[in-house]
Amino acid sequence: MDFKREFKQEMVRKLLLPGGKSATELSREIGVTAQTLYNWRDKYSYGSDAVARKKRTNGLPAGERAKAVLEHARLPAADVGEWLRKKGLQSDHIELWERELVATCETSREKEEVRLLKNKNRHLEKDLFKKDKALAELSAIIILQKKMADLFPQEKEP
Image (tube, rainbow, N blue to C red; front, side, top):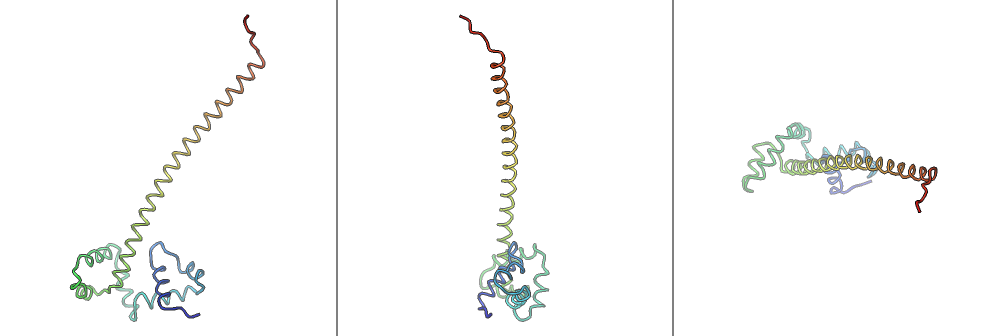
């Protein structure tokens, strides 16, 4: 099957984003082998000298990548090319790292929201359990009162 370059690049982007699909999941979804996805990744995410760039750029810690993205954002457009050459980076790396940062922030917000919702759910379940217990107790009292009234009827005073 022959795929267009844009499609391959989109699949590579999905593969590289943090929190994205694994190569196995993506390969099942589009009908290619995981190795094919890895080959596309090497070809489209790093260019021709893939191995050298991969070692040089992916070896950077996350903090350094974030720092590079921030530095890049502060630079005037005229100075970007010189800065990239000086750092040994490409604009593709900066764009990828920027997308990673955004995805990481969104993931962190989602995790915090899930944590808060779980905490709220736990408190609501605890409250519901207490109310169920109180309702069962009240029901038992009412039933016992009715049985008492049936066993020991009180005579009405004239």
